[in-house]
Length: 113
Length: 108
Image (tube, rainbow over all chains, first blue to last red; front, side):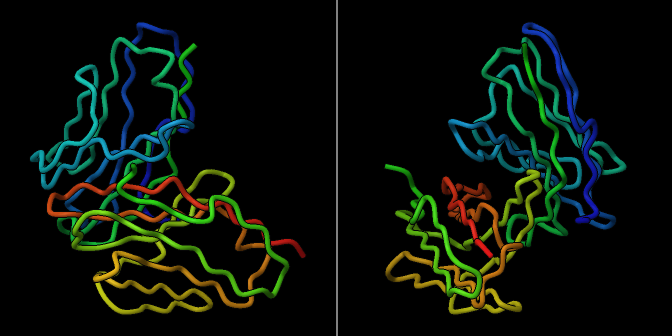
C-alpha cells in the first residue's frame, strides 16, 4: 500500500458525460501527478500540482482539467467524454517536486461506452 | 522514434534465472525511474537514479549517462517477479516520459 488513495476504482459512463476522479496523496506529500494509461499509448503524464499550484502540463486535453485543493487532495475532471478516453488513470504523489520518488495510487479504471 | 525505448518487449524466464531489461533514451535526463506494474494494474516505484548503480534485494538498476542507457537486473528470478517493468525518464522539465514496458513472465 503506497498510501496514495484514488476513488472511484472503477467508473463506467457514456460518451458526452463528465466525471471527476479523486486522489489523496500520502500524508506529508505536497506534489500530485496525474497519468493516463491506455492500451495504445501506454503511460502518459497529464499534469503536476505542487502545494496547490500547477507546475507542469503534459499531454492533457482541453476537455480535461485538474486542481489541487488546500488539503492537498486533487481532482481530475474529464468532460465531453469520448470512447478513446477509456483508460486507467493514475495519481502519484511525492514529498517535494519532480526530483523526488513518486508513489502511485491504485488507479481508476474509466470505461466510456 | 520514441524518446524511451525498452527491450525486450516480452521476456519469459525459468525460475532462478538472471534477468536483464534494457532502457535506452534519446534526450538528456536528470533522472531515470524503474517502475513495476502488477497484473492487477498497481504501479510500484522500484528505483530512481541519476548515476551509477542501486540495489534493493534481488533487484539491481544501473545507468550509463554517457551512453543514455539503463538496465534493470533481477537475480534468482521468481514467479512473483512476473509483471510489466516500465522505464521512465525525466528531462529538463518536470515531466516523466515512459517507455512502453517489458512484460516479464517467470515460470516455476
